[in-house]
Length: 79
Image (cartoon, rainbow, N blue to C red; front, side, top):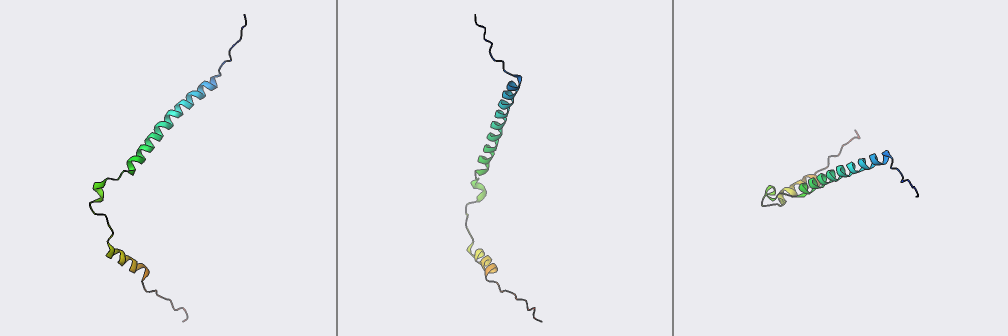
C-alpha cells in the first residue's frame, strides 16, 4: 500500500481565512449602510420645497446692478 500523506494546512492560513471572511462581512455591511444613506439623502421631499420654485427677477436684477454697475472709487495718491 502506498502511504501518501496529505499536505497539512498551517494554522496561519486558517486564521487568515477567518480574518478575510470577517472583513468581507464587515465591508459588505458598511458599504450597504453607506449606499443606503446616499440613496436616502438623494431623495428630495417635495413638501419641503413648496408649490412654487422660481427666481424673483427684480431681486436678481438688483443684485446684478449692485455688483456689476457700481461706481468705482479711485484713490488719488498723487498729493
